[in-house]
Image (cartoon, rainbow over all chains, first blue to last red; front, side, top):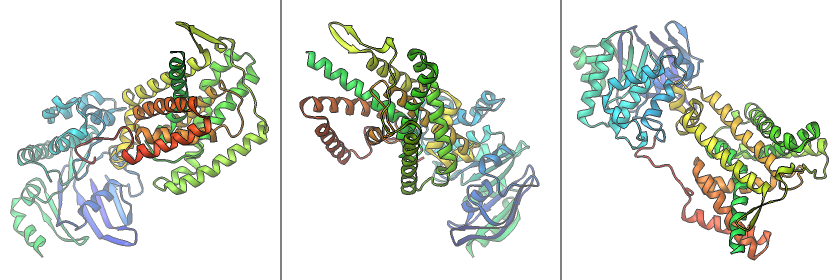
Length: 230
Length: 294
């Protein structure tokens, strides 16, 4: 589904991701783990197109999308939930969803389907997104991403900074999404247990390089924690 | 009582002109953060569009009504041309943008002098806008009432468009978080162009209105550009409702100060008041309130 081949990413003259290659299989889940500053978010932003890859290739369903802007990657089936529960703060919850649904043939139905996944949002449709709690904003962010009918969902630390009761709900929704088929997921997550539970493949990143990789599942937790401790 | 009614009306009238001049800037500067010094020359282009329309069509009433959409189109296309050729390379470089658009404004002024001459030209108002209207014993110039009505119509139309249309939602989303908009599938490039088209088109409409106030010349825009920026900054960056309130407050203050002093002194006092206001409230009348930065 997504292949990043030997990708270098730089901020100005400073290269922060060095020759990283990862793959997210069709209908599969890949998790990228690592400590803060390892380059995880940078890698995801390059996959989405918000940062240019200085070298290497990014392939979406075999098509080279390295030079495409983010909105055109979204049209090819990629959706991105960035770190930090980002929303359009001055737009209402309903407008946050409609702005993505506008122009899509099944726009209204897609909004309803997204709200069915996160029923808590139904009572908040008229409230400005900037006034929602962190957990509500994260649910809104995932709902907004799903409205684009993605085949690849990229999630950057979806449970970070959110109260535990909502974390459980978000994790459950993500696991449900990955198990119903037709959706590949690239997940960056600090919570190793959840990441490995969801992922069929994992990568550990340190200082911008892949230092360990393997098959997911809860049995890989020790290997991952060892790799992250090095 | 006469003085009070006259001054209140003058304030509203002055405010409506300021508002029309500033409404487009509230989009391009207030919402996109682009300091476009050529906005005044888009106003001038709108005014000359009205002049050309009257030369072509003859009948003042018809030409005024045709001029409004035509000036919107001319202003909008000039804005799109500027955005596509220069500004798109300069987002997030405000000083460069300021210098470049100032240069463009000088070029447009010279172009107007070459085409229309250095002397001012008149665009006579149609008969139905000439003379006063009597209301409760007070007389109000029809042209000023027309400008006030047009300003209100422009604000209502813009506000509804931003709130209710897909393009409006895309503009507001792009303004608030460009990267999130882009990674949500919104073409921010196309949104920028359309935003600039609407903002610059509104400047063109303001130009048509200014032909009702007196003769027009190549430096018409320079008379309004500073006031227009004041309105947007006092109103609060990115706030259309702030621009509306600021325009009418500034128009009213100017009208009252002018009544007891002169136009030049009124300008100085107004600027001093704005500086004092911004010291106390740098974010302007309105500010964005959220629980998070997003």
